[in-house]
Image (cartoon, rainbow, N blue to C red):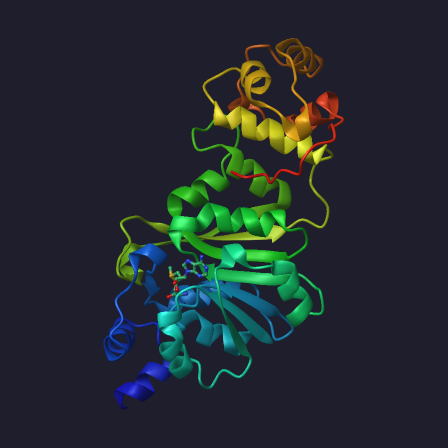
Length: 306
Ligand code: SAM
């Protein structure tokens, strides 16, 4: 089989990836977090975990040279890719030339209106998001997906293992934080597999994990959302402080400032000591605290912004 044919068959091999990078004189760009997948089994594992069918419209963030896109194109009804690096244009024209159901938007995902993508390509319905994420912007990308309401059904992504552990952690562990709570409020996280650095070119310096987040139809807790995320932000911005101190010094959701006494009283009502730290509270407890301390005051809209 000629090299070109081999490359079309499966791009996610070390040989085909090196060949295509050399052919187009491309070097993986660190500033865009480029680590290309060279293991087709890992890609199939991601697609299986995302349960992609012909009825699905998939959003792929960062197609790179198209290794995962090729397989997504076969599995899904439609694939919308958002790629920031325009130097990959000639590569994708070749590697995706037979993939009629793929549309590439050359832009920054962080500046992309995801609701507009749902409307334009999926009849307004939420998308299945799949990606080998650029690690330098993992948290902002996840927060953007979570904050824009009803834009995803599931998010199946390769992330640094450390980030996957953080997202799935609970109260009391040192990884637990604002990101864990935000993700767990919007979706159920599941770790699908651990992936070694040898599955990428170039090799990242860390282990990776595939994480699948399935959106909840309804939030798992009743809360005052704006107040709750303000409390979470304040609690973890100063995580060594007691919650009462962190909130009374740092919290200002919608213009409201709580006193130490107000917070202590609310904690007492919940049966928690005045000295408790935010890292000891579960999502349910932050939700309860938000209902006791709310209602929110009028003020500028704030993003969750972790
Ligand atoms: N999907 C390919 C693969 O698995 O081989 C490439 C994955 S690579 C880890 C991350 C990809 O995201 C790169 O193609 C990179 O150019 C792209 N990227 C980085 N920052 C981006 C951004 N802000 N918006 C859209 N794409 C971005």
